[in-house]
Each structure stands twice: as C-alpha cells, then as structure tokens.
Image (cartoon, rainbow, N blue to C red; front, side, top):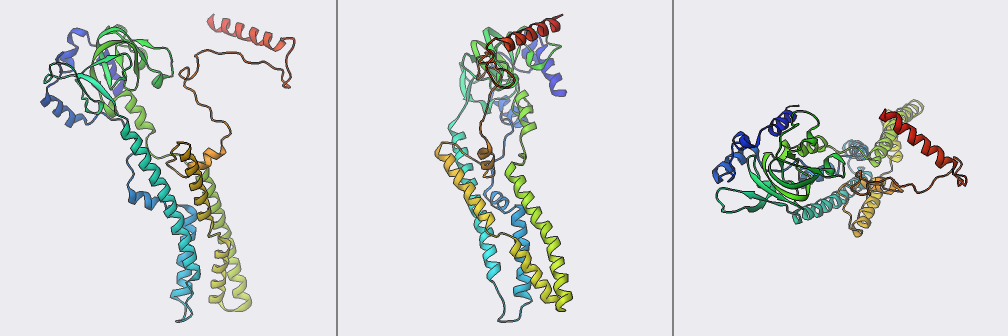
Length: 387
C-alpha cells in the first residue's frame, strides 16, 4: 500500500516542480550524488534466485526421503554387523553396497544440476541491457548498464528501448509503451507528462509513469527515475514469486514411496522381532533378523536407477538446447502431452477466430444449429451486460 501511494504521489507532481520533488535537475545527477544514492538504494536489479553455492548444492543432493531411509539402514547395519559383532565376524558387505549406492546417486545428481547451473549463468552473462542517461559530468547522454541507475537519474527513451526502471515522464513525443509483460494487455498505452487523473484508478493505468519491464513501441521521451530494483512495480512482483520452488510430481512420488517403505518397516520389524523372539528365545538374533528384513524391503539400487534415468533425460533435453536446472523437473516434462503458452495477445493476434463447431456427440453440425444458438447466446449476453 505504501509503495502504491508513492507512485500516485510521483504521478501527481506538476511538470514545473517535478525535478525539485525528486531532488534532481534537467542536466542530471553529479557523480557524487550518484554514489551517495547507489550506496543508499543499491544496484538496479530485481530479486531473483541467488547464485548456487557448490557446497550447499552438494549437500542438498543428499537431502532426500529415500536416501534418508537408506542412511538409517546403514547406521543400524554398522551397529549390528560391526560394532556389536565379535572380532573376525564383522560383515561390511551391506554397509558398503548401500553406501556406494547413496553416494553415487547423490554425486551424479549434484554433477548434472551443477553443470546446468553453470550453463544458465553463462547464458545470463551474454545478455547485457543498457540505457541512455543524462549526467552532469557528461556533455551529452551516455550509455550505461541499467544496473547503475539510481533514483533521480534523468533517462532518454525511444522506440525499441526497454524501460530500465520506474520512470516519471517529463517530456514525450508520440510515446507509446507496451505493458503486456505486466498487465497482459497487448495494446500499447500512450504516455505523456500530463498529471491529470493521477490520483485514482490502477497504478498501471497512470499515463505519466512508465514501469520497469515494459518497452517503448513508438515515439520518444525523457523521464526521471523514481524507483529502482526491488522498489519498482516489477520488483514487488519478482519478490513475491522468488524463493522456494513448489514440489514437483517427482518429489511427491518419491516422498510417497519413502513413507510407504517406512510404514512397512514400522509394521514388519516389530512383528518379525516378536515372532522370532518368542519362538526361538534369542532376542538379539531376532532383532538382527528383523533388521535384515528391513534391509531386504528397501530397494538399494532405486536411487541410482532413478537418478541415472533423470540424468539421461537432462542430457537429451540439452541436445535440444534446453537447460534443466532441477533434475526432478524431468518428470514434469515427461508427463506433458501438450504445452500451451500464451500472454493475452502477445503470442496471438488479439482476436478470437472460430475454427470449427460440432454437436455434443462430436459430429458435424450440417444445419448450423449449434452456430446459430451460439450466436444468439453471445448477442443477448453482450446486450444484457451493456444494459
């Protein structure tokens, strides 16, 4: 709410006093003022996923419900087969096999995800965005990276430019801006220095404010940067969606299998332990046998097989020039039959086109009865809502 009030307050300032309001002037900011404001507001970057640390990525590769079950079995097997066994009777076979499966699966997952992360970062470095800014230390406008902008900077925008921050327009000539990335509306909106109607309505409908993430369709203009980074309208949206990703279908499936195994163990181990203990009288031997049953219930090779298949899918996707940063997402790709994407006119013609009309049973409507009824429904519905 506070952010919205600031935008409306900036939009309501008359052109004659707008430079004083933002503590700047038509010649732009000086180098000293830029440094002071950059230290206060930071770089002009919206919040995004933080760069992954190799150590944390490696540790997260081991955080898995199924691997947790196998780790518990390794610990129990170590206690029973090594720590409590008599000298010369220690058996490391089960421990080594399970440990190798767990470590190999986790290392393979870490390697694939880290390679994908490195590739995506390399792609991001190839893209640089600049803008034209007026600074007092330069005789004319200069091109700088948009990350170096600070509130109070005076920027020039023209057709084809991306709006580098939230900007209050002070000069405009046939300036039309597309805000489809923010609102979904494909029609460009004219922007003018006029502050009329700047005290009501929606934020994105303000006629003298251009928002970061939108782009200039035609015309040119001059504006004052009023907000940068996470303080922009786009930044508030990015901050709300950045963070922990939702669990994929694969994550949910692995969790269900893991908890199913745990429930089996919680039932089978006490049952086998009690039956063997009561019938044979050797409770230690009964407990060791019960743990052996738990080990037998657990498919130790499953993590390795699953990770190998997901890695194979990631490699296949990379050959199609698609980077999969999370191996678990491969399951979602494989579960799709058709992927439909649209942005309300940005990918379509912004027009509804009738391709075909059929009866309820799927047969062709030769008498055009369905088409006629659909027309009447559309006509009277539109007439009703207009009145």
